Amino acid sequence: MDRAAIAELLLSAGAVELRTSEPFFTFASGIRSPVYTDNRLLISDPGARLAIRDAFAARVRELGLEPEVIAGTATAGIPHAAFLADGMSLPMVYVRGSAKGHGKQNRIEGRLAPGAKVLLVEDLISTGGSSVSAAEALRDAGAEVIHVLAIFSYGFDSARDGFEAAGFPWSSLVTFDDVVELARADGRIGAAETDLLGRWSRDPATWPGGGGGAAEEKAVAPAEEALIVAADLPGREEIEALAKQVAGAAGYLKLNSAFVAHGPELVAAVKGLGLKVFLDLKFHDIPNTAANYCREAVRMGVGLLTIHASSGSGMMTACAEAVRDEATRLKCEAPKVLAVTALTSLSDGDLADVGVPGGRDAQVPRLAELARDAGVDGVVCSVAEAAAVRRACGRIFLIVTPGVRPAGALADDHARSATPADAVAAGADYIVVGRPVYGADDPGGAAGSIAAEISAARENG
Image (cartoon, rainbow, N blue to C red; front, side):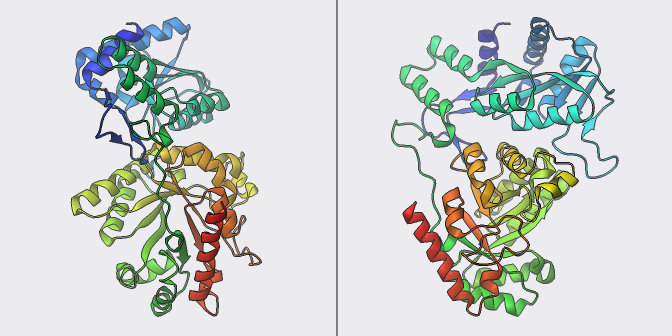
């Protein structure tokens, strides 16, 4: 099959849907889109899945590849890898989004010999973050990834740059441009619709959603909501007193050890005092268990919650979906899910000790892109990495920066700290401050001063 025939197959099967008028699609990241791709639909059609298998095999021959193992990415790449491996009579493995939290704690399932030449099969490549992560897992296991081959790719520059930086050759059977060109050629869309789709493809994060007007501006929280006060205090009475004092200046109270000590009743009490709750428990578990944690957080009515990005795309996707589904079931506002990239207490040396040699500057944006692709709303990172995350993930993606201190304050146990003005300039949406507020003689006044710094920095920016 040529590219046009594959594009026709995807459109006819509904695996790629173009929608050039309202209502547009909304991705889990919050980005609005006139296109939606779901190649999982192909596995239900025996003719379509065999056609994709044969197209994959033809591309392998065309590229002169001689794979010894076919690998699939979890979960949508697994069936197509299985079809291809069966057709080529080759062994198959699959790569989880993250290592299992039980048993042998495998990330790669199946038997993979050291030095094996592996073809990695994907259903879809958007920014490429999850695909590169899977390929790196195979490489770390001693395999040689000779190519990453997908059914469909959006053609984003970030994917090209990511694969190039990681050193993995890649291609797709069909691209977004191929689908648009076919739809234009056979009259499904006209010139105006083609232009709309092209504008989205060039800059999806700031695309206006049609109409040719100015790009949508991301909603900016007012200064008093942008400030999050960390309530690292032992007693419930102390915490509630702090909440009362800062309620006029801050938007959120961050609970972690305090929640372990006092539970859901404390969440309800803080909300009753006029603050939203940032539940900072940094869930990191197998996908199903972590998703259950998140559902309980929705039921408590928290506004923000954290998970660990290093848990992998599988767990992050499960958490993001669980939050949306539970909020829909309860008919309530869904909390924003934030992925913790690298704790601000960790130096580059600390990261190297746990097997991350590239340091924070490489690890944080990489995990941020993985989180965005998994449908997470934003990340927690230090101010020093915020600008890089903003460039990598776009304007709609939320950035929360801890380790923020008013000018002249001590950094405490954060390896990287900065002032509120630094955080705003770097692109932070929410700013976390702890000791300089709850340790002050006048916590309400301290919070008010920091909120004023945030307002001034935004106005000057």
